[in-house]
Length: 128
Image (cartoon, rainbow, N blue to C red; front, side, top):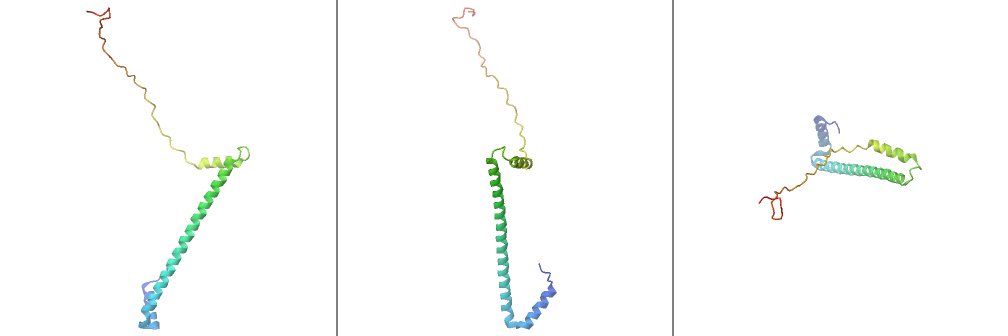
């Protein structure tokens, strides 16, 4: 943020020691630290509020656009070319769903039970 090197900090410390003296210097450094912390917290709060507001603005804009689209969808198709233009634009930007290759259904196999023919007493052609 600030381009302060070691020599600059050393010069500031020596000047502060000479101006304030060894008795008041620790209290002044402590107060400066407290004020810097408060300033940083305040800036962080302001930043988070601005980000929240920007997010809320984006949500409001999205809801507004959705409402416009819903209003246009309710109108009759012949009333406005705007609906067709918006729908065409939305369709162009919407990605196509991937095609899924489904295998053709297999032919059902007939389930024929094979049984051996048994001669019966009623059968006249059966050997005896």
